[in-house]
Length: 98
Image 1 (tube, rainbow, N blue to C red):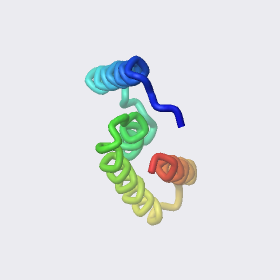
Image 2 (image 1 turned 120 degrees about the vertical axis):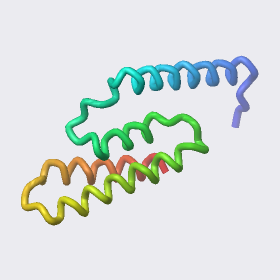
Image 3 (image 1 turned 30 degrees about the horizontal axis):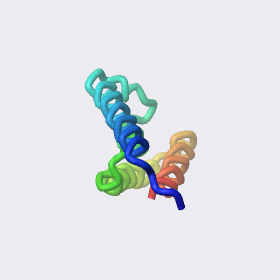
Image 4 (image 1 turned 135 degrees about the vertical axis):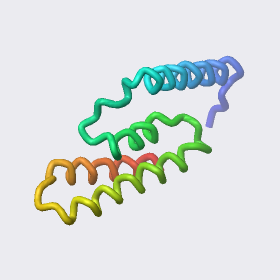
């Protein structure tokens, strides 16, 4: 396994800083909202866009909780098949992030 050289480490760090800055800008401007199901899609998006491994677990847990809560709400409703499918897709995505 090849180790990353100093230049490569700096490049990866710089890319992460740039991406984190872009995400922060989008959050402040409200451009991360506008989802069809923001109650759980916003936490899911934040988990997907998290680059810090230490914070990733926390964000994945928050998104999973939001998804499970919404799934529980939908079991009492007779409609919402599209959202239920989207929720299951979100849970599958979180499994990949773990």
